[in-house]
Amino acid sequence: MSTTAVTAPMRNYRGRFAPSPSGPLHFGSLVAAVGSYLDAKSNQGAWLVRIEDIDTTRVIEGADTDILTTLEAYGLQWDEDVAYQTKRHHLYAHTIEYLNSQQGVYACHCSRKEIKALGGIYQGHCQSLQHSQQNSALRLIQRHATCHYNDLIQGDINVDHALAHEDYLIKRSDGLYAYQLVVVVDDIEQGITNVVRGADLLEPTARQLSLFKQLDKPAPRYAHLPLAVAKPGFKLSKQNYAPAIDKKNPKPALLNAFEFLGLAPSTELLSLNIDEMMTWAINNYTLQNIPKVQQIQISQQLQSKAPQFTHL
Image (cartoon, rainbow, N blue to C red; front, top):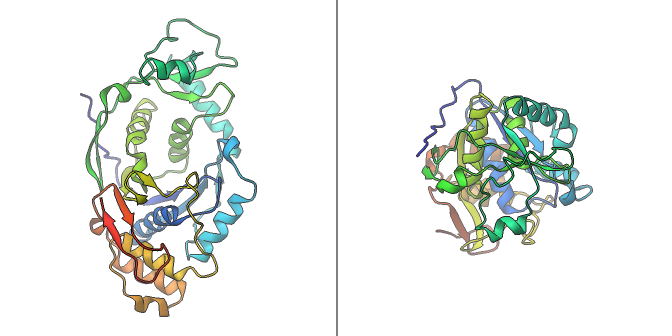
């Protein structure tokens, strides 16, 4: 079993929130935004916003502007210019050129249906066939499989051996760069030291750690927050039509997010303005108080003044 510890040397803290512009922010995305913001600010660090619009088939026009406006309404102000993945194609192309120079990429013509029929894990069928890379999907030859790593919230994470060793896609056959490539390239280029995000990305993190190793770059520290779920296994998401959070009345949802993250806020905070609420949260935040579970079920209205959560 290959083991990779998340041991990037600590330097000036740089965190990020990276939403996809496929719809408005919901309570689950607010938790991720607030969690990453508080972790950065409590460490006197920088907090960046990156719009992950690389999958243009899922982008909704105007969603990026709505997301940024919502963040501002909740007192979440980013420290540098907002980055858009669609403006960073040259970085991804350069990285694939480098991986090609290391004989680390091959073209693949296998469909999702074919892979699913063989068990769902790609078995390297095309690696020896020497397909032309033009108009083909591209796969990374997995040379640094990560089967285990330590998460700052969830603890020891073990990843399925076959999944960890899979040659995964880094560019799709339609020409779009794959998430697993671009997220690593972005984190390297932006100097991200700490990634605080939802626990639905625990398994993809193993692939990202492997790619950092293959590119000979230090990986960030990872802390995966519990997911807000309507019921076990059913996370709040844009695809599941989770309701958008209220930009005009942000205090109740912000208070709920604080409680979700283990801050134990009082409803007296609602008498403060947004900036004062956020200052209180920064001063009281600690990563150790975040519940060490992968899901928390929300049992009342997301924006009620007395939310109840069930740890799963």
